[in-house]
Every structure is written in structure tokens, then in C-alpha cells.
Length: 326
Image (cartoon, rainbow, N blue to C red; front, side, top):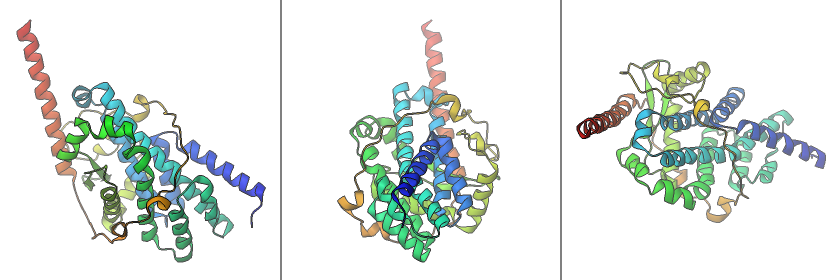
């Protein structure tokens, strides 16, 4: 049994550590992966680090010349804030869970009741106790996917600002229809694995997407290549991190994330336990079919080349009109 002073010390340590590592996309990505290397049984931490890398690349895409031309400044700022807010919220919920697991390992006893003080859902507290007893790694991955997607559903996906200013606007709608957004698992070779993101606002679809990504990433051949990439390629937020290994035609450059975005100060609200409000849908617990070796590099870059070609054609047309007018 721990004393009141023990609890205060644990809360202070976990709160401080989470705040330090939740500074921006770079610190989040690194924190997830550092934790995974210490505790490889927590597979979700590696998945989270790779998805976080993708969030960084999506953020800096918005600073590329084609996107700056095709989207207004306000549209780009709102899309950035969508990525930033969702990833900040997930980290603020998930990282205390990882730290409490670390504490439990150090004390050699389950300390997961502390999670209620961080407003972690009762569903995850139950799942962490189950994992401690049975060490079902895949079940924990799926539980964390279900939990974190529920965590962002109200504050981001259903929040009025993001609904009206992002998800109902043309840039998001076109991206959804054309399936130009993807989560990529790079390697230090010409192989690029992953899958496309569609219907991001649908909670069930996001949960299925997360489970599909886990299935792809943890298939043996993909896992070994992706892990090697994560170990040796520092995350900067620029797609140059992995594009240097690909055989591609020249690409518009993407900047380092910290060169273009400031640190954002977020204001949290009291978390309402989504599990107490709505519970679990049985379809979320269904086993997905295995997805192995899903290479999407070719189609992903074909779509990007079409987008860039549209930008260059539009730019050339406007230049021609300018000279004709003068």
C-alpha cells in the first residue's frame, strides 16, 4: 500500500514527464519510441511513434509550395491545428498510462489504480490490470487503439470548430474522396508500407484503421525494416527523413518541423470517461484479417505527382494570363 506522500510524488513525476514530452510532434515521437525500446512488450508505443512521425510529415506538407498555393493560410493553420490537437490529446492520455506501467514494473506490483487521477478511462484501467495478469500484447494494442480514438472523438472530431472549419470544408472533403492521405511505414530501402486514411471522422473506421496499421507494421518483414528505420533515422518532421532512401523523381522540399511551427500551448478540460457514457461496441473487438507487406509507395507518390502537376499547370496558366494582361 502506498502513502499519501508516495501518491503525491508519483503524480508530480508523471504530470511533469508527460508535460515535458508533450511539447511538440518531435518530443512526442521520440518519447513513444524511447519507451518502446525499454519496454518492447508494449507494442502500441512503437505504433504510436510511427503514426506520430506521419503526423509531423502531414504538418510540414502544409508548408510545401504546392500546398501553400492551393490552400489559403487560414486553411493550412486549421489543418495543422487538427493534427496538433489530436496528437496532443492522445499523448496527454496515453503517456501517463505508459509511465504508470513503468512504475508498476519498478515496484513489481500493479499501480494502475493511479490512472483514475489522470482521468484515464475505466476501460483502460481494467485492460492494464488484465495485461499485467495475462500479458496479452495484442489485446493491449487493440485496447489502446480503441481508447485513444474515443479520447479524441468529442474534443476534436465532434468539436464545433473542427467540424465546421475543417471536416466540412473542401480541402478535407477532397482529400477524403481522392484518398491522398496515408499512414506510411518507411524503411531504409525503396520499400514503403502502410495504408490510406479514409472517413477519418468515423470513430469505428479509425479504430479499424488503427488495427489494420498494427497488423501491417507487426508482420515480421515489415516490423524488422521499420524498426531499423526508426532506430537510425532521426525524426525531423520532414519527409526527407525517408524520401532519401526512395527512387523518386525530384520532390518539392519539406522543411524541418521546428523551422516552421511554434510550440502550441493547449488548454485541457476535465475528461469525461467515454466508457461510462457509451461503453464498447462489439464490432470494435472483432479480429481484423491479417494485412501483410502492404506496399503503397508507388500509388502514394503517383497521387502526389498528380497533385503537384495540377499545381504547376495552374501556376503556368496564371503566369500566362499575367503576361497576356500586361
